[in-house]
Amino acid sequence: MDKIRVAIIGIGNMGSGHARQLRDGKVPGAMLTAVCDLNPERLQWAKQKLGSDIALYESSDELFAADAADAIIIATPHYDHPPLTIEGLQKGLHVLCEKPAGVYTKAVREMNRVADKSDRVFGLMFNQRQRPLHQKFKDLVDSGELGALMRTNWIITSWFRSQSYYDSGDWRASWRGEGGGVLLNQCPHNLDLWQWICGMPKRVRAFCAFGKYHDIEVEDDVTAFVEYDNGATGLFITSTGEAAGTNRLEVMGDRGKVVMEDGQLTFWRTRQPVAEFTRNTPTGFGAPETWKCDVPYNGGGEEHLGVLKNWTNAIRCGEKLTAPGQDGIHSLELSNAMLLSSWTDSWVDIPIDDDRFQNMLEEKVKTSRYQKKTKGDGPVDLSGSFN
Image (tube, rainbow, N blue to C red; front, side, top):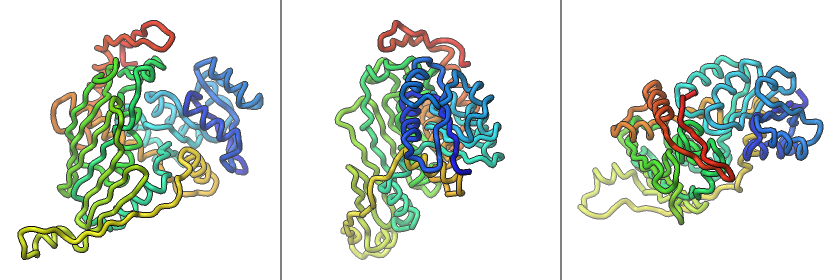
């Protein structure tokens, strides 16, 4: 096809950004033809800013019923991601979904089953996979330069958010509206990169604090420990309440250590494997000779635009996806495991018990008595049923 007709469902912060890039012709071979949003004010914004030739729909049902697009971008609140993706794929549309893939793994596994049976292109907006810095880190690990994995540590506390941020929308920071806090909103990218580079662990033990720094009911501070199949261990720390925050990923292997911090990638390479030195050195002290290298990488990457181009190129000419939609379950499984571990005060094996997590989340929603105040509005009652 010459031009892929793209529709966007949800034109809030992320959806409107994607709409402008398509409108401005920044995605070769694709054009914006329709937008959909439940909020009349957002549709009015679209009419004024995107042009009179863009079709406007008040519901996804209206959009799906119309022959308005070949592909859709889903940029709605989290709970809607799996059902909208499934419906889009079943109606023969290509789909690009914003992160996270969903709120709980059971729904996302069903979404992936539908995607596996479909011949449509399904991508996820993991824009940080487009960064050359992250790609270089993954290449160092995948190539074997680091040797066998020994330890991973990611401190990502640079996600500071004020109370005003959480008050900016009635869906934010509640089990019913968002389904989680920092793990589900801010950290899907970090959790995705962590497993993309280092692989998935076999079990998780986490300590989550709920409303520690803000008037919210979901987690805003997390410390999690993991174990990998080969005996390696890992640590993941995140928060939206610390300033100044840290963003440092350190991966230790049998052949050295790589650290990513402040936009730099540094490799401390051991002259011989640590295990070999430990076995064979005749002295009781000392350590393997180590060389410090500043690892070069090219540019900053195109981020969201790069994902849009990659997705449309995959549709038009079969380009390999940087972030296949089915990959979204991995970061979600990590966040679900961390919450489940904290709720049950125990280690949680991966893959997790999907039903157990969903049942516990439903109970959180049903028993919630959290009264939410949104900016400019009175209190919003977020108690009630899961549906």
